[in-house]
Length: 111
Length: 115
Image (cartoon, each protein chain N blue to C red):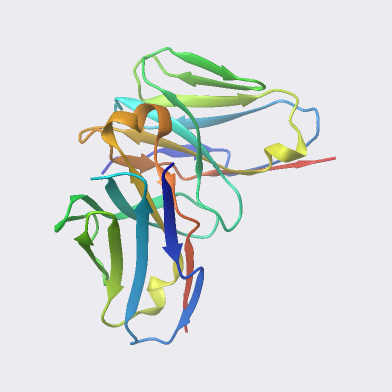
C-alpha cells in the first residue's frame, strides 16, 4: 500500500508569514498533484508536477517535486486569510489516473 | 463544460438501514469515476473506481458496494449500514487525456452520519 505522509498536520499562522508543507513517501510516483479543500466541499486541483526536480509557481505558491519523485513540497509566501483550507497532495502511479491522497495539512491564516 | 452532481448533501441514517448515494457527470463521455471517503479534516481513502459501464474495482474490503449502470452514473450502496460507515463521501471523475492538466473533478460531497 502506498502512503503519502504530510507534515505538519496543522498550521496556524498570521497573515504575511511564509510556510512550507511537505509530502513524503517511500514510493515513486509518475506525477504528483496538490489540491486545496474548503469545508464541506470537494478538493480543487492547484497543480500537477511530473518531472523529478520540477518547480512550478502559481503566484505566491511554489511547488517542488523531489528528484526521486517520492516527495514534494508546497511553499506559500506572504500567506493571506484566503489561503486557509486543507491542502492535500496526491500521487499517481500504475494506472495513470488513480490517485493516492496524502494525510492532509490544515492551514489557518489569521489577520 | 463538464459538471458533476452528487446527492444528497447530508444524510442521517440508522444502523442497519440501506444506503444509496448517486453521482452523475455531464458534458463528457466515458469518464473514469471514483468514490472516496474522507475522515474529518484528513486525507481521502479510495473506495471504488470504474473505467467503464459495469466495471468496478474495489480498493478496500468494506460494507459498501458500487455500481455503474450508465456511462455517467456511479452509485455507492450498502445493504446494512454500520456506525463505522459515517464520513464524508466524495465522488470524482477524470478523463485520462486531461488528467495532468485538470486532475480529478470532485462533487460537493455527502456527509453521512450513521446513528
